[in-house]
Image (cartoon, rainbow, N blue to C red; front, side):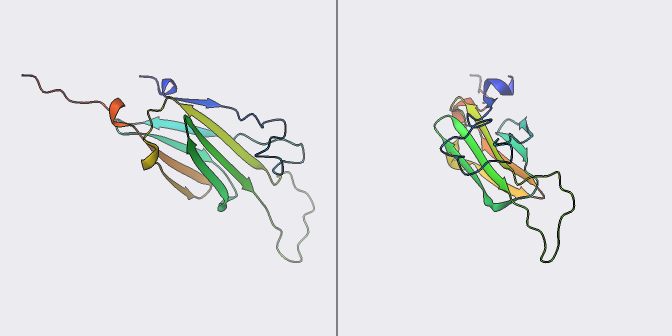
Length: 137
């Protein structure tokens, strides 16, 4: 079974323009960035790993509603006191990732951990889609 039959990545509607949710979270170019991510699968769950460098737990929100997993985060860099950047390519960038699924995720059991710029999310499969061993009579 292909994982993308179960979880389909979709760019947020806010990419490239402001939306209600991201109206105050834009980069210098006015865009919200889609973070890099990967999806793994076991018999019990899907694993989602999202790269969010510089994002803290306080600046991160994960919601599961209807058939979507939504991740919104913001990287905010602060210069140390008395320090002036002479050159800087990175921006204080907001991230937004929307993943759609076909309601085969047990939303009540979703767990997430943010460590070293990686958000690891466990998306347990609903009982109805887990493989079952059938007893033969």
